[in-house]
Image (cartoon, rainbow, N blue to C red; front, side):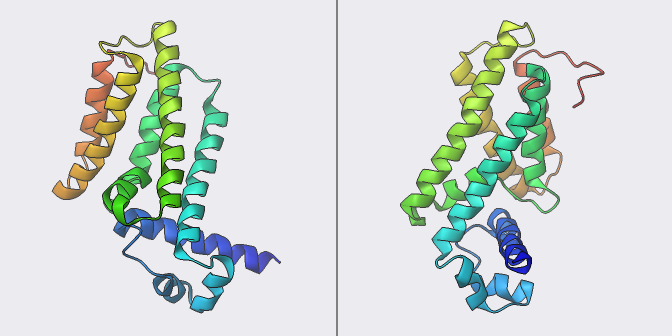
Length: 197
């Protein structure tokens, strides 16, 4: 049974890479089959349609973030926020990748409703975490906000998505970190040597 599981995991891992590099519409089952050295029918065995594979990709992102929240929930708001920034930075990678929200946003009108709906769930998962983290940071004195918590969270998410896109267009690896630095300054955080990020 393990080879079947391994094949499924390899399919999803490779599909995620394609998803963030070229978008959902720009790769096919045949691309994955060729890369893995398997028959296209082997992919259809696990995922009868590409939309089902797309939902699985988004579900993996969802589960990964749930695990991330679980592992970091006892940390300070500052560490949780900076950790989230690092997570988004990891989405960009070395090859100008963008995060799942950017992919779905760009292809929104040609994607199945099920994928749109799942992305909205994923978006709210991240937004709720950011709102809670900012709110906790206000309460413990870590952050000072000039806007409301929800408005700040929405501004942060918009800035992060935009920075990923612009970084890719400019081929400028420093653009995203500079945007993150500006976001930190916006909420008047003070750097600590032991913050871990």
